[in-house]
Structures are given as structure tokens and as C-alpha cells.
Image (cartoon, rainbow, N blue to C red; front, side, top):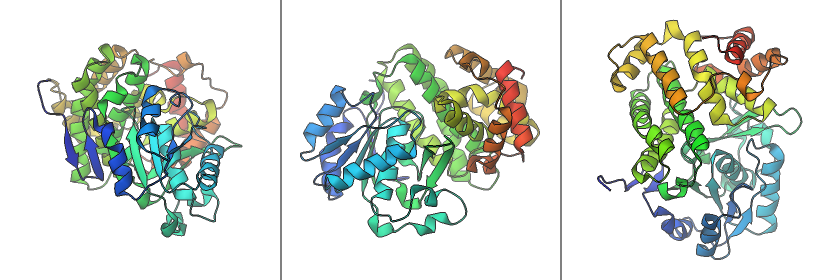
Length: 384
């Protein structure tokens, strides 16, 4: 190993990072006063050795694994029931973005007397939360994409209409994060690619979001630089621990940066993910260039910064767009939504849901439902 990839960070929360960091899980639980936490993960991870080892290391820990890839309210409600019935006193959110989102939402809801949807990220709904009822959370990411381990929100779909909602409270940020790149080594290449480009989109959309936030902008730019270098390496060789470490760090950085805002790619990805049960990272990876084109006239300065950090000879929009297209192709990301068996039948609904998604508020160009429907059509057919 040629460089130091370990450290203890306190921004945006307390992060223990590096190969083998999972060994600090018992200490993290003790520091937060947990004696019998509930480990929340998904069905695909629950039988893996890493989950068994985590449970063995924390005596009294329980397991809840009823979490879908695009989680719904019932997954959160089931976790709350398991928490209360088991007499648990904290949450270990362990897994990809879905498990992390459900774990954080469970920790929120165990102390509330309102339904989950009353805390949707609209207006001042977050002030309804009874903060004294929040359970402590240790977050352990196993993918390098959503950055939910350092996020103040959870994305959960409604059970009936499968419409994704953002549940938000500032104190949903986990008190402890354990970032261990060893836990990501087993990710297959296609998941490595989709989650990794998702992290890139976080940085890109945060940088392009309007408003003054130089701290977020700087973190976003560095996250994109790391991803541009590390993601192809992790894709080619999943055992490259330095590439895995850089990707895990970049994922947390992207989510830290997008406290500034996201944009149209995420608005569409949330709509499509809920309706078609499509992997969130893959949706963002496909959508990015189409949303870039829609925002072209408003993101010149941001694109110039991206071109510099990518060391492109031409700082113009077309050069960055060409790089994004080539980067996706290198990672075997499909060029169109049509290749993923999506179709135009529900374009109007997609557009309507995207236009009212909270992420749309950070888009540098004001887009309405018809605009989002048109972007969706272009992404279906590959018309850049």
C-alpha cells in the first residue's frame, strides 16, 4: 500500500475510516450507550459473513433485514416494530443506501407518534419531530455511492403509489460512521460502476446547484477528481483497496457536498426508481448527460471547473459531456433508459413526479413537468 488511507474525521460527523475499521464497531456502540442495538440491513447481505461477524462482536444485538432495494414505508414500520419488541436502544445501519436509509428512518420513528410521511422534506415538517425520541445510529456503508452514512435524510417510497419521498431531520445524521473499504471489496463490477457514478453525480449536481457554498463546492470537486481516477480501477479490480478506499471517501464527500443541493438527474431518478423499481445509482448514471444538456446554458462556470479537475485540454461544455459519455461507456453503463426496459407510456407521470421532487429545487434551470417528461423521452431513445 503506497499511501495512507486511514484516519479519524469529525466532519461532517465522527468517521472512523480505513481497512479493518469495522473492528471499532463495539466501541462505537458503547460510546453511544448502546447495549442491545438493532442491526438493520437488507436481505441480500443478512447471511454474509460480515453481518455475522458484526452481530457476534456486539453482544445483545438483534437483526432486521426486511429492506427492499427501493425501500418502502412498510420496511421502516417493520423495523420500528422489531426495535420496540426487542427492547433495543440504538441502530446499526449496515449496508448500501437502502439499508442505511431504512436504519436512519427506524431510528427517527421509534420515538414519534406521527406517521412517517408527516416528516417529508416539505416546508418545516422537520420541526414536528420529537428529538428526545431519536435513537442513536452507527452507520456502516458497504457500497460507495449514496453517501447516506453522512446524510440527514432517508429516501423511502410510499407503499401504495411507489412514489419516493425524502424524510428529513438534521439529527438523522448518524453519530458515528465506520468507513471500511474492506467491506466493499466483494461488490460486483456492475454495482461498483452504478454506485460510483451515482457518487459522481452527487458531486456534479452539488457543484451546479445555485447558491453560495464554497465548502460544498470544494468537497464536490475533490470527490469528482477521486472518482474519475479510482472508479475505473475499482471496476477493473475489485480487490484494489486503495481504489476502494478513495471511492468510499468520495461517496461520503458527495453526500456532504449535496447539502448544498442536487438537481434534475436526482429528481428523475427518484421518480423512475419508485415507479419501475430501478436501481437508484444506475438511473442517475444513465440520466446525467441528458440533464447536463438541459442545463447547458446555466452551468458554464461549473463545467469549466470540472474540466480543470479532470485535466481536459478543452474547458468547454462539449469536452466535459464527451468525457462523461466515455466514462460511462468505460464502466459499461447503458446509454439509454430504453435498454433497461423502460418505456414512454408513463412519461407524463414521470415528469410530474420529478417536477415536485425536492431535488428539483436545486436544479440550475427551472424545469416543469413537461420539461422533465421531455428529458425522460430523450433518455429513452439516446437523443443527446
